[in-house]
Image (cartoon, rainbow, N blue to C red; front, side):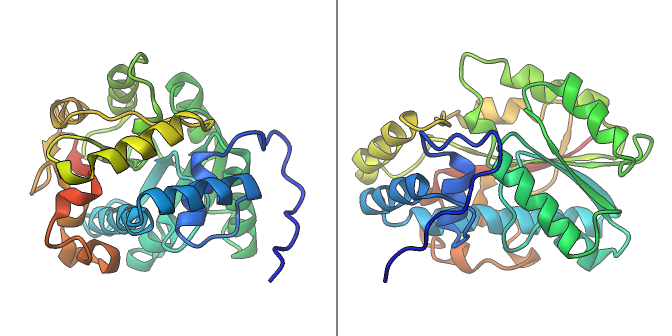
Amino acid sequence: MTQAPDPEAPEGVDLDRPNAARIYDWFLGGTANWAIDREFGEKAVQTFPMIKTIAKAGREFLGRGVRYMAEQGIDQFLDIGSGVPTVGNVHEIATSVNPNARCVYVDNEPVAVAHSQILLERDGVADRHAVLQGDLRNPADVWPRALDTGVLDPKRPIGLIMVGVLYFVGRDEPALEIVQKYLSLLPSGSYFLSSHLTDDGVPTNDGERRDAIHKQYQKSSTPFHYRSRAEFGEFFSGLELVEPGIAWVSDWHPEAGETTASARMADDPSFSGGICALGRKP
C-alpha cells in the first residue's frame, strides 16, 4: 500500500532531521510524524526490536504517576516536555479521577504543540487546559507563561511532570539547576514526576544494540544522554520520595493502572533502561 503524502508541516518544524517527539509518536502508533521520523523509527526497531515496547512502558508509567497524584488530591498539572498527544494524555487521566483537574502542556516541538491545541479544541476543553511552546531549559520563561494561562494556581499544590525528557538535556548543560529552579517555584505539597534513561544495571548482553541506538539518536535533532541512578536521584533532593523510590519504570506501582507493555518486561525490568520516581515537596 502506498504511503499517503505527509501533510504540510506547521511553521517552525525541522524536517531535515528526525525529531524525538515525532519518533516517539511513531513508536506508540501515532500519526503526527513524517517520513524522516518513520525511517528513523524503522531502523531503530531493526536494531533494537523491543524499543516500541519500551516506549509504551514509559507512557504507561506516566499514566500511573498522574493517576496516583490525582488520587492524592492533586488537581493541577504542569507537563513539561509533553510530546505529541497520544493515548492516555495527562488531562484525560487526571479528569477521570477529578473532573475539575487542569493541565498546562509545554513542549518545544511545533508539531507537539499544534496537535495538543487541536486535541484540546476538538474535545471542547481548551478553556480548562492549555498548551505552550517553550524549552524546559528556560524556567524563567516557561513558569510565568504557564501561570499567565490562568489554568494554574501557584498557591496550591501542582503536579510537575518531566517524563521522558530530561535525557535530552546535555551532560554539559545545568540539568540539576534547571530542575531545582522549577522545584523552588512549586508550593508545598506539590509533586515531581520524572523518568530517565540509564545504563546503570542494564543487561550487558544487548550492549551493542543499545550503543547503536544511542549513536543513531546522536544524528537526530534530539540526541539523548544517559545519567546514573545517583545523578537522577539528585533531581529529587529535598523531596519526599514516594515508595518504592527510584525504580525501573515497569516496577513503579504496577497496580495503579495499565501495565500491558511493562508486563512484557516483568522478568527483567532493567531491560527498559528506564528509571523513574515521584517526589513530594514538604
